Amino acid sequence: MDMALGGKVDYAVLNKSYADGGAQKEAKRRYSLAEFVAAERQVVFGAPDVDHISTSHVERANLSMRMGMRRFARLTNAFSKKLENHMAAIGLYFMVYNFVKIPRPIKTTPAMEAGVTDLLWSMEDIVLMAETNA
Image 1 (cartoon, helix red, strand yellow):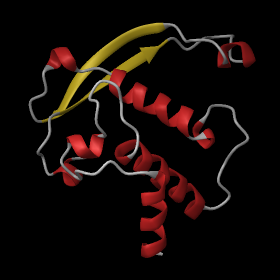
Image 2 (cartoon, one colour):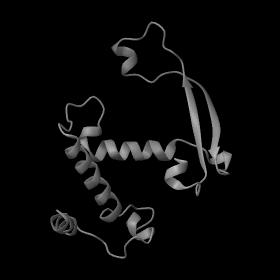
Image 3 (spheres, helix red, strand yellow):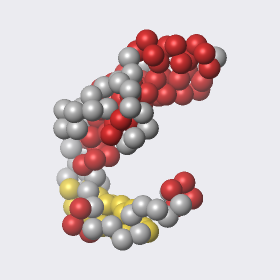
């Protein structure tokens, strides 16, 4: 993480502990929530605000991915047979997520909000870009 972001961000983790489940190691335990035991906040680097260390953002991102790509859904038989197909599906998902979809809170695409583009992309734009770069 530090190498990828060059130490320019504040980074922390929230380690959650859950009960073992004891004798409930069969299917019943697999489909039910584990008993929460404790949570420990740990600063990895930078100076994050300890009061804002949370898993909610990453959990929401994981849910959006599971809803947007069937191959990431839990207990599914949808999968990529080749790594190339898997990478292409992920790339397409994030391209649409960042350049096409407009989330309600920010009322613009994430790419426009970040200053990466000033254009609202369409699926046709993505297909044309993919064809010219192929």
